[in-house]
Length: 109
Image (cartoon, rainbow, N blue to C red; front, side):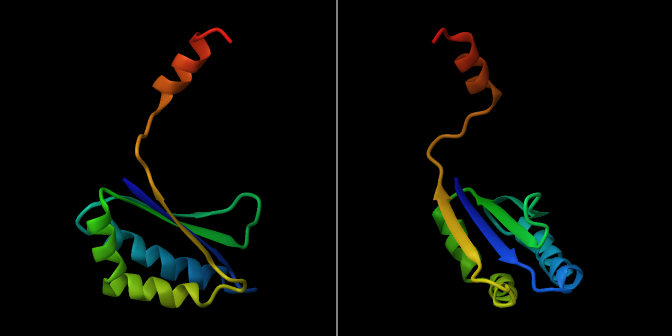
């Protein structure tokens, strides 16, 4: 799985407009082949920061997405960021859930 995380600093007075534009890309991204999830959220620590995250089953599907017209729209919206936008890609080898927490908490230190 590959996770893409992007954060955009919203210019003064543009939160609703930029947020709506980013939200309009969530649905089209979610239906692309290989997309496991796509979300848009607002940072709790910085209310002027919007976060766009997508998860992909493999690199081939991610690359197809990066070449898509909807990603071109996302790149154009990133340019509106009041500071340089941050974007990171994580190649996840193993994902675990509460089973890891339970195992760690039940094992003596």
